[in-house]
Image (cartoon, rainbow, N blue to C red; front, side, top):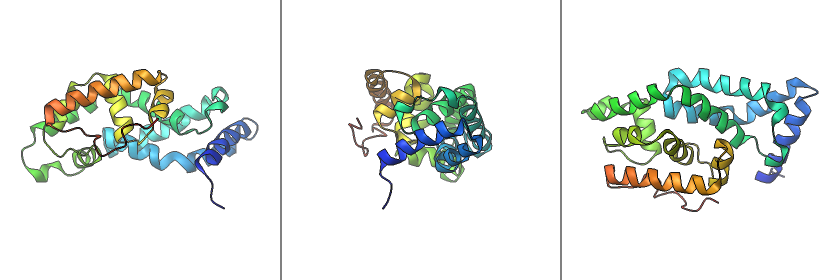
Length: 195
């Protein structure tokens, strides 16, 4: 029988609780979520930073595991929240990347990080870089957690420690900004009510 999402969520909480007595058990959380967290950070900051930040995410999570709220169930949103805060430390680099992407004229120059970001948010237009750079950090985090992390609105709220309504308003502002810059919404192909 395969694990359902709720069974995995309960399992995450149980594993984290068990890791307080048996620290090596936290490796299960790492094994279960590392690839997704790494992919999210890679799409935001590139491969060079992804290894370090993804590893640091799990180090921080391990150190703070006693404070994990088991009622959350899944560790996924908690880990994405930690990763997003660590990405925040690298925001200037992220904004520089988006602005540099906007200055590139040749399609071949978009290989690597820019291609992954562009594909992930479904907007291949060169205006994406300035549109993302123009967003406030909070709006950008919400948009990218939805677009790149594929988190639901409640997961984004938990990851960032904000209310569900704040997620909705930040995402709405981000969509308006990107739509105005590109003439398209990067999350149009996604389910509009992830709640």
